[in-house]
Length: 286
Image (tube, rainbow, N blue to C red; front, side):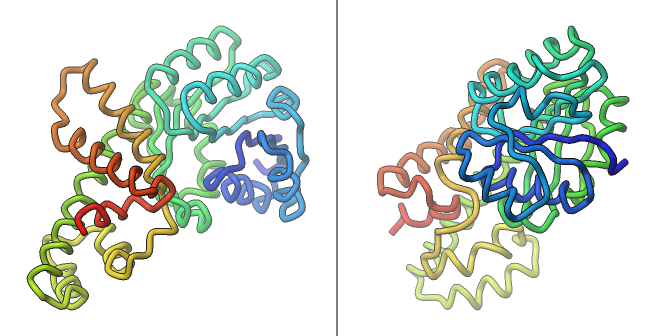
């Protein structure tokens, strides 16, 4: 399996360590990044080849992974890669994007006898750096079975959830849940501080009960000390929530809380917190 030729397009906060795990696993890795200096830095740390364009990186690759910014980035980078990919290869998109772009690329790939999976990830920067990501996948089962052993090198869990687009829809659910939980945690901490409680002590107690969550376990203490310079940025969360809200308008679902929290994140952006961690929702309550 490790004699496969793989490419990774996009070496951001998530892609950089993910590509690193593939290199450390012994795969023949070629990388592309819009900022060449970042790609060269990656190559100095890991064993791999830097390519100056997506099509160059994708040529002769058995599997091409990508993790870029938004739908427009996905379309631009993917189409360049697909133009050079061989029949029988697979394109795996780890970007959080719309289900529409996933379906579009699935059809483009199918016409060229290339497999395609939409496979957004959850777990944040820490999950990527520790190889502990959770990956939600949409696409054909036969293609997923081919790629899953490779994905396992940087994921603690991946799961095929249905046809193409299902991975992106599942990621929308993930972000909807996170938005509501972080807002609830922010309000609880704000309430506790106003009530004069030792919030750290309270969190220690309630985290052992039904209120427990990943956000409480990993972010409550830093929220109390105004540390917001890590994790998943507000700008990225707003992008993701707007994808979910747009999808809800298509399928007729009601996302009242999500829409409200999205506006709360807009308030945080106005405070200059676009690059703060999503737990910075607390700042708008002070």
